[in-house]
Length: 69
Image 1 (spheres, helix red, strand yellow):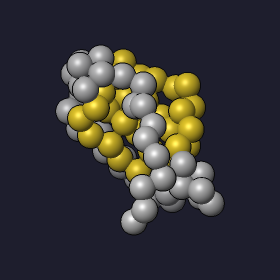
Image 2: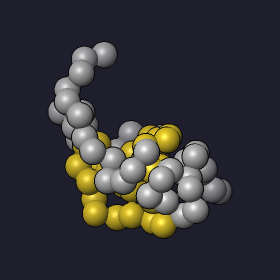
Image 3: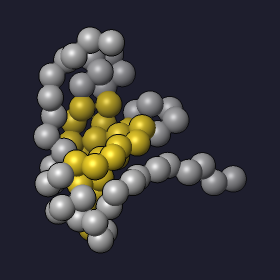
Image 4: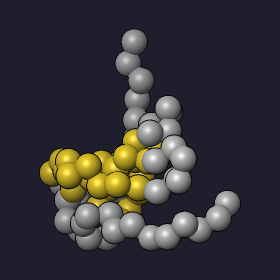
């Protein structure tokens, strides 16, 4: 692994993150600000782009992705 840089999580107290199985999306849980923020993962560069999509939840400490049939 090689450090490419740092990307703000769009909230306070990042607590957990999940990468969807195809590897194109990362969700970051920000515990103190009560948000889950979506990022696109560039497949070539490995960098993150904030998609501007945020979901409000009460103090998230975990985020996971579940496949439904």
